[in-house]
Every structure is written in structure tokens, then in C-alpha cells.
Length: 154
Image (cartoon, rainbow, N blue to C red; front, side, top):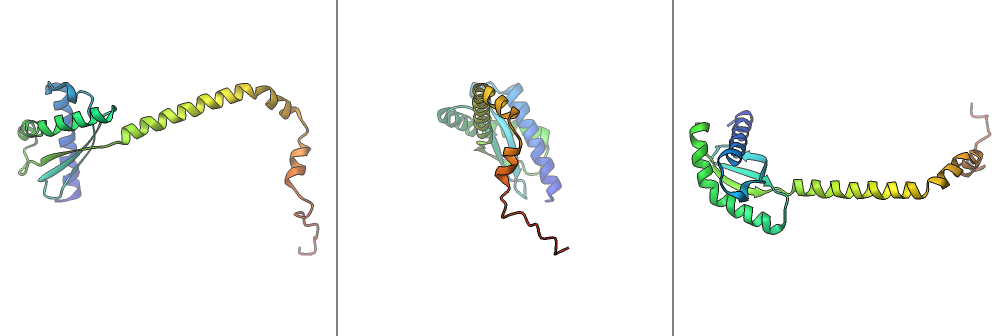
């Protein structure tokens, strides 16, 4: 199968799964599941579904069990809508990218807070330094040895 076809099938599966989770699932363990990606193999017999959930390792394990148990129901609910020759077997895989993104966002927030605290503490020192002589800055950066006064090369 072509890449275009596999991409369309992946997108259809992703949309239908999201719709089923939101509208028809009665399982509270599946409420916070986010489908991040669907990868279908070339003959569309297997679809690897990457999902994410923000929670503890125990929450992830419980959700994995619920998804594995609901795979048959999800597949049977998708069959009339997708109308494919081969309805893929659904294999769910946890995708930690949202958890990593949340952790990075948390760290960036902490850095911003620490930076704001440091700026507030050092605010008076920066104002005094700004009023100082700019020639000191230039003198520190340039050594006399680095300056070439020979204009003979021109």
C-alpha cells in the first residue's frame, strides 16, 4: 500500500477512536486518554496506537489494561465506519511525550520564577552597573597584544 493510503487509514482510525472514547465509552479509566499517533503497517492488518495519559505509573498500567481489554470492542465499533478490507488489529503503546512535555514546562516555569527572584534581588546592583563607565568594559576585552598596528600589509 502507498504512504498516502496508510496515512489516510491512520487518520481515520485516530478520529474514530477519539470519537468512541468521548461519546460511547462508559469506562472511566479511558476518560483522560489522548491518542497521540497511529501507525498502520503496509497491509493494514496491524495498527499501533500511541496514547498518552498524565498520571502515575499505576494509572498508566490501569489504562493499558483497560485499552487492551477494550481493543475488541473498539475494533467492532470501527468496522462499519471504516469499511476496510482488513480491519487492523489494535495494539496500544504508551507514549510518554506528553508527560515529558509537562515536566519540561514545569522546569521552565521554575527557572522563570528563580530568574524573577534573582532579578528582584539584584535589581539595584544592575542599575549601578549601568551607570558605570563603559570604557572599563572595552579595556577588559581588548589586549594590547591583539591589536595589530602594522598597516604595511595593505
